[in-house]
Length: 495
Ligand SMILES: Nc1ncnc2c1ncn2[C@@H]1O[C@H](COP(=O)(O)OP(=O)(O)OP(=O)(O)O)[C@@H](O)[C@H]1O
Ligand SMILES: [Mg+2]
Image (cartoon, rainbow, N blue to C red; front, side, top):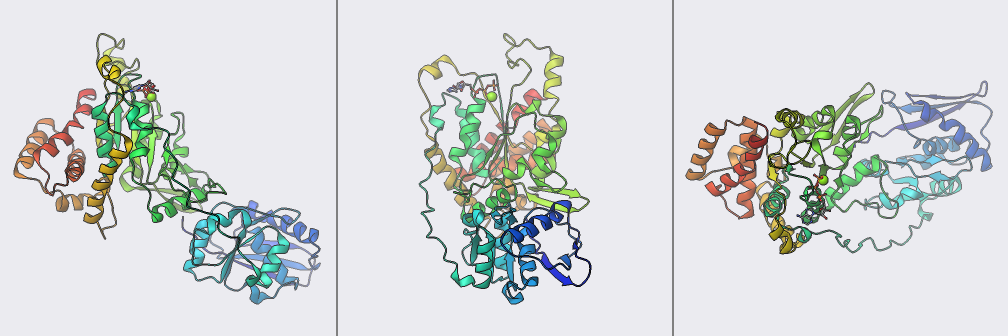
């Protein structure tokens, strides 16, 4: 996510004709010498038969990827006398070469261009395929090149590059194909989803098969407020590094909805590899990570979520360095309460008490503690089903959510957070003021139900969101009672 500029130096001196690369370059980067040499030759530029040394500075960072082809080629071109050294001063160059001299797109160009702007580079030279992505940054000149000849031409005379006319970037918002309107009954779950989205709280659906858990979860993105431009850019950076941007519409405009399968490995969730790439939790940044059939995930995979759920970032340490990716996601999970799915309906459930306990025991208490709202999804009654689909559409719910978000935005202005779900304990004392009745109710509940300190804070956060939905300054007993009702479930199933 953070870009460290690398300076590429080339020296040509007398001696046996060899080509040496130094400066902690990986095997992948060293391969570039053959590509560059061949591409130059195929474009009629012969390198002098001398000792050529290429250095990447600073030498303490491991260099990875194919993006170094273009800067190495540019440096060699000055050594061959094709361009003057001053043409390369204060510019950023990135791109991969093919043997015939064509320039291929590389992942991660957007963060590089942002960094180049911060460093006040004269201009950026990038592959043509990355041009639309890089153009998202307005106040720096970006030159897209398709092949080696274009690169030489624009290095000599950057002013001759005439950017193509922008096609209309303001696409009409995509018509949502799903809507909350289609769901029969499940008013409680709908309300829970509304609260969860307003305050960016984690949410758990629990209920028998075919009641609509997956259906509800897939409709949550339709009630989320739109991304701001800064959030879009932040997400686009992550997707750029992961190499997941489309060439035509590079800016990520929709909140992500990631639903990894339950066979996913811990590394695919957190991000991994020797040169780590963002995992599902980072790709779900500012959006939803949906884990369907939660107990089917491996214990290790679930436990890896614990730290990022608290810190909103994931920190991966490798020998080559420490990688930090943002991971502020909203966890939505769905599960059946037992292997057959019908517990606690004893007329239909075929599981023994031991089986139920074993199944639910796959979820650890610390993980459950991190889930603010637990919503029961009962089977839909015939009456609810025959009376047709629900009455509130996603658009209506989204309007209420946006009002609640606006209140939070004003409250947290300048504090670095934007939602109740992100509120740290320090802020809880400051912003969660209770009425006398609310305090009394919370005290009784705390003593009777004996939940953990973390649960206590979570209840307060949820109560804050419920109060915000009604535009109340103080948290009343009704808000506390509703917040408590969303924690009642884990007592029902996990005790
Ligand atoms: N409340 C509902 N309103 C309308 N249709 C529903 C409802 N619940 C379920 N359905 C229908 O049943 C199908 C299955 O629902 P869904 O996949 O959401 O169930 P589920 O609760 O996730 O079940 P499982 O526990 O087996 O995963 C849906 O595609 C939908 O057609
Ligand atoms: Mg399902």
